[in-house]
Amino acid sequence: MPAVPLERRRLGARFASCVLAVASLAGCATKPPASDPQALADYRAANDPLEPTNRFFYGVNFTLDRYTFKPVAQAYVYVVPRPVRVSVHNLLVNIGQPVTLFNSILEGKPRRAGDTLVRFAVNSTVGIGGLFDVAKGLGYKQVDADGGLTLASYGIAPGPYLFLPVLGPSNPRNATGFALDIALSPYTYVPRGYGLLTFNWAIYGLGAIDGRSLVLHELDELNATALDPYATIRSAYQQSDRSRLRALEADQRSTPPDWYSR
Amino acid sequence: MPQMMIRRGLGRLALALSLATVLGRTAQADPATSAAFVHTLGDRLVAVVNESAPAAQKRDQLRPIIDQNIAVDDIARFCLGRYYPTATPAQQQQYVELFHTVLLNSIVGHLGSYRGVSFRVGRATAQADGDHVETTIFRPGESPTDVEWVIAPGTPKVVDVVAEGTSLRQTQRGDYTSYLDRHGGSVPTLIAALTRQVSHFQPG
Image (cartoon, rainbow over all chains, first blue to last red; front, side, top):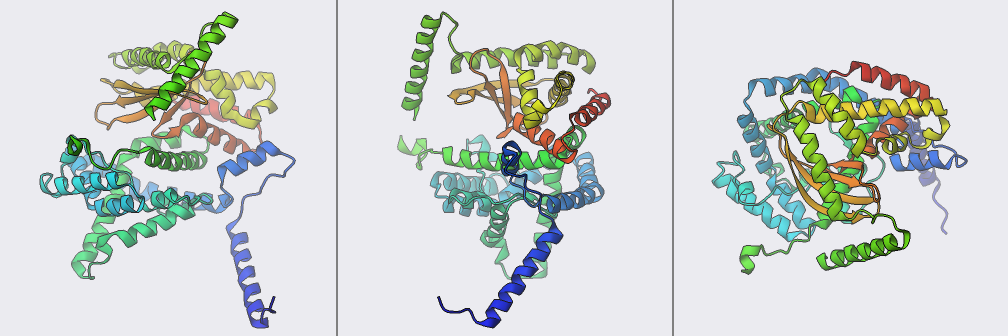
């Protein structure tokens, strides 16, 4: 093996010490000793070696939520009547359909891609820009597809649990998937102009409030009843992640719909 | 796929019936029986929930239904995970009793404040940990939720509820074991926390 040049070795050492410094600042969870196999099994199942850092960001998020997102979402629910809120949600879902479509194609699920295309076409026209979910009445249910799920369908392991600021529960694979979704979204590629920038921010903001308003009751209940809300959210997120992948793999419907074969 | 499932189901049924004749005991629960059980249990729960009675009264009526049809003790033991054997028998009993109340409060919290709740029973499949019965619950003003009931083989009792892909038993276990990890494995501390929680519960 050729000798590594001195400079490369120094750089390598410097990089390694940087990583170690960041990791020690970040705080890794203490792994139970091998003499306690049950504790070790629980530790492995939780898959959260960065727990102290995650708990820190969870605290930041919780405080941020208490003073910004939650009051705004509560006001939104109080002021805006339910049918309008449902329409806003439908609109946001419809705007996100291109990403769902591309992810379904990448997942190798042409039936799901087809359903998404029909939903997008029908809801944008008959549903007036996506305000009304007409396609659901026709039997086309919303397809669950995002970057994280697409990467999971390729067999990529999720990696350790991460609680990201603002974005919330995640893991390295799903965070990469989130970036993938931004890359797949057609709105990212339209030339920048003041109008589009405002549109993008409005959609993100409205999406955040809409999303928050849908889980107001559940999150309140979670914080009231869970002894460790952080761990409860972690467990629920990891299970939901696995169950979405199972649901995707279980969807073995034929590509041509029934009416086509008749 | 359906042929495999039918064959598997028939295989299990055949095994169960042969066991029953040999041992003279009642046959193991099969998916159809579990589905019927969930249907009956659901009807009873919904009947109580849909009454126009005060929340406290509904709670008292729900308690016996839950205790008879849900394996609460088993779930309680499961939720404490590796810490259950470390508790004294007195602590274990205290914990299980508290868990009964916590579970009741949780169900009342999810269903009790609604009126006009209905549900539909879907597919029932036999799996390794029991029979999984899919249901959809319709609450007024909310979108339908998919809830899967896991019925233990043998006595028809609910051992787990899977709401939108999340097992409530697993989530609760994660909660309690994580709490105990951060409090030095002290079961009395957990019992005190649960007691506080139960005293703060406001029905309805």
